[in-house]
Length: 352
Length: 265
Image 1 (cartoon, rainbow over the protein chains, first blue to last red):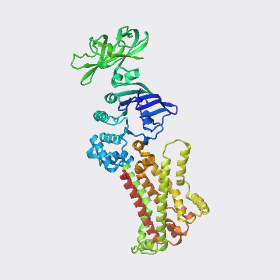
Image 2: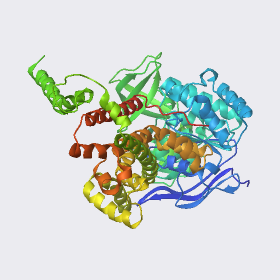
Image 3: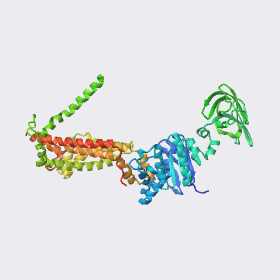
Image 4: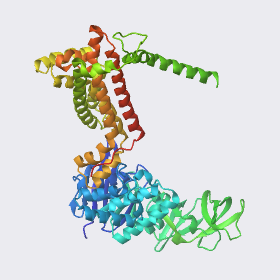
């Protein structure tokens, strides 16, 4: 196995009695875009701060490009860091902010000017080089911060919720821009966010954190379609968690029973008979008709209008099930009896 | 205007009158032609200002005040800024709390107590009756003003800015020189102005530690009131007040333009 570009080995961080990061093992490859996703307090920012050198791990080893870095001060780590509130130097112009890392590296004035200009063009801010950061909008400041973190061609770029302070439209634009830069420049990016849709949009791989541990790491697709735990299923996107008991596992197909005695078939997964489980089924995978293999009958409790679709909230088998419904269909109304169905492929079993 | 608003204005004006009336009473006498410090003023002249710059004791004392004031400003600003940087970390240890209190103590210790102590100590170290001695004494009471002002701006500096500088390759001394100090400049300058003003009007410590050669303007005014009262003291007071107003104006301008100066690159 090749050595990972960035490696965490049994890294812990303890503040007093509080274990913020617990025995973390993580490998990130060169050129990869990895998101650390989790609720606040899950330890994801602390991990980034340890990688950048602002926090020292309580135990464990961090290495980058085959070199152990956990004892190295931040200014010797050669990593570009983009902070949530941009952290631009307010007493310097935009151009001086971007030139700062170059001047730290003793780059000659002429070359520095040229690289600053290229970096400004890259983030489409060429005309604003003489402005002060306070004269820029939030989105422009974020672009300057990005240019400053990339201009010295660092081996790793770390981003700590860089888009958190922007409004929705701008955030989506910046997500695409950053993804584009990542592809074009072949950067290794570690991106911390609590916004699951941001992580799904941008990442090669997502590490989902909960209480200082990785719950699951995988591609956005794996994480969304095959959540390893109930926490991941609930944290990523929206899902229905239907309580059930495992019945039998005969080769390809497993069967579970609902509280009302109804039996459903689920995808491949080794289940012990009698085990209490949850079925995670995404709302968009449930059809408001009986066309799929697993059928459940219920009563519509509420219909919520969402513009491009409707959400049906249905009482079924003693539980609440949410599903999406196209507007064009003859939509059910509150109080209607309804038959829903989903394919065994689209329901994923997680521990309860 | 309602009654409450009206009485607020009246009270405010009365308070201002109370504070400014003594100045209004003494200052016009700076321009009297008479040798007595009393009203009515028969005719006006600038002879007392003339005396300030020509009479040896007054001229000497103004020069002394400037020498000692600038010396104090430089020393207190350097020491106070270093102290504020050192005390910056918000650590809850008793050592930090003790150090913080120790730096602010000269503001509350009676000047007489400090004066006696300094006089005894200076006599032992051959600093009595020297410029350096007076500058050190003034620095002791000026440092707290610098510490307070610089601490306030340091507290307002986003720690992320210094982390950003470090991540971009700046070693700690470079972070200090290119990020922290430029951002702290407004506080350092207002601390320096306070230090100068403190030195300028310090009398008690000066009485204890200064010799005849270090007689400052404030000290000279103090003794001239007792020895021979003349309108030159009103002229000196006017200069004093103008100096103070100038310092206050500098501070206000700085506060208005909170944007600190550009870092030297």
